[in-house]
Image 1 (cartoon, rainbow, N blue to C red):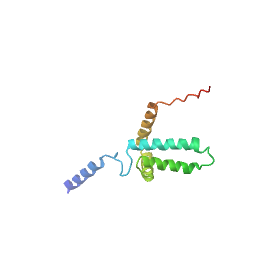
Image 2: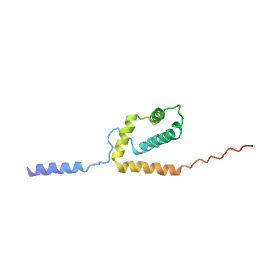
Image 3: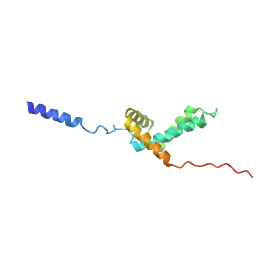
Image 4: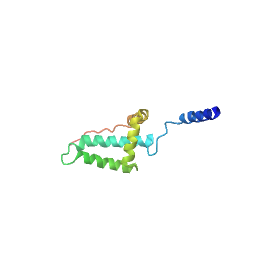
Length: 120
């Protein structure tokens, strides 16, 4: 009887020490999440800077259209993104990794210089 209890206890301990970092099904991998989140943030910035200033356009509708285009480009659904976003928010270490990699990639990209138009 003691051997059976000890065996069961050993199995419970063994399985409880498994990999807890595995993402649940349907969660975007960090690299994919980084790419999608980067595009969503750029769309939000575009909406804030340009679309809100255009009184003929509804900024919320335009932002939703941009997000749908982003999801289509990355071959994911809105539900996939928001489910993954909630997962990453709850796992702050993973979210930090994604954000840090976004920052480092942004720093590596050269900023385009715009020179003024020369009038003759």
